[in-house]
Amino acid sequence: MGGIGIWQLVIVLLIVFLLFGSKRLKTLGGDLGETIQGFRRSMASNSEADDSPPQVQQQQAPFSGTAQQSHSQTDRQA
Image (cartoon, rainbow, N blue to C red):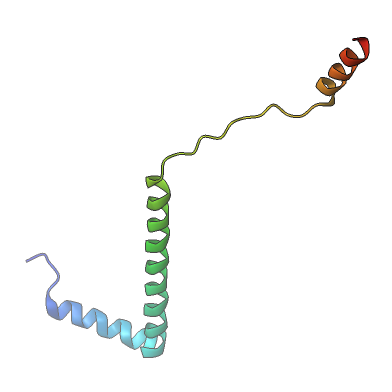
């Protein structure tokens, strides 16, 4: 009592089948399957990326011509 019975489920599925037709339901099922597979692939690639140790990148100071100019001036003075 209170739950959906097997006959109620069959009637709902029959109405859905009549509304959309077999071709439309087939394409909807295929699209849903592709969507689930794509989601699983993206979750697997995300978990593989999370499992790898983080790579440390060294920050370099931005290149400016002033440091090079100061070295050339000290070379001239010497």
